[in-house]
Amino acid sequence: MLKHRLIHPEINQILGRAGHHSKILIADGNYPASSTLGPNAQLVSLNLAPGIVTCTQVLETLLTAIPIEAAHTMMYETSGPYALSEDPPVWALYRRAIAAANIELQLEPIEKWAFYEAVKTTDHVLTIQTADQQRFANLLLTVGVRMD
Image (cartoon, rainbow, N blue to C red; front, side, top):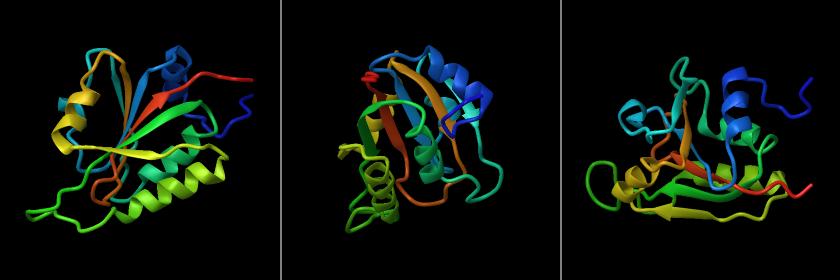
């Protein structure tokens, strides 16, 4: 019986094989997940209906299962039709989830096109596709080292 909250068998299997520096992408509902997988990555689709499940729900669950040493967001656009003038509201939800898990971790934005390239690396092992409809909700996590 698992003690953490993550019960999805395929995700548990992939995370069990992942090691330090492995990358896990929590993708929002607009992210082109199937065309941006790294060469070693697997795609798990959790997008049941718009908003079900959210990136925040996935993050909260992953925080119970694996150590995370870095969290990169896709930097929002400041011009054009999808422009924002400040951090997307979902980033505040991420910060709250991280704080609630008693982890000291800062969100580190990566420019949009550089974010896509960061996902395509050989360290990328898993994309979890959500149906989150919030803009710029993509979150690239780096697995840390278990200390206990």
